Length: 235
Image 1 (cartoon, rainbow, N blue to C red):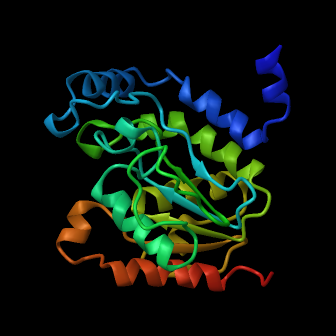
Image 2 (cartoon, rainbow, N blue to C red; image 1 turned 120 degrees about the vertical axis):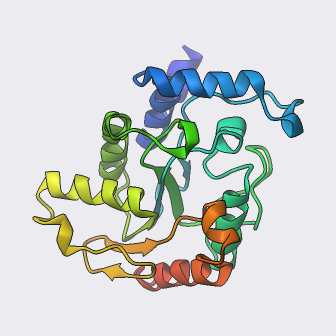
């Protein structure tokens, strides 16, 4: 009875996250996440790895939606929160903090006190894939979760796609919904803004490969989120 009362008072987006956490639809991914959680990385031997599909994170009433690729094996798959516990997350939340969307610049654990202001983070995939490369069939299997989020997040005015895979996943949904007719009409380029409703902003993914090589700098990523803020209606 107590759990039923909690569910009845829960935001529909939060109910969806509970469903995501218990998903077992992709055997390869589930086996990989569990094996990573069992073996662990030496630096995190004292951690109780999450090892399950990672729920989205943020303000369910947000006007900014951020779409990533998938959890990192020793980041979100360890901590249980999107972009938390690895260098990609530190880079992302530093930029979000500077742009006024995050309460702090680092994200280390679900209990670190971080909150998002008017922003919500989701991903094309919810399980950490081997070599950070989910199969097309696995992304397709996971897509209904993102589709449902897009329906439930009523206030979104701008979407930031982090990387080409997230960008393509989002455009694929828009095409199947009839919102756009040709995906090719929307090229991917860092900082590009496509005048859809909600507006679509492109960004390189804050992967270690991109940030360590200088392809994506903190200033570049912060500028993207400041651009996104400028697309939101005044309050």
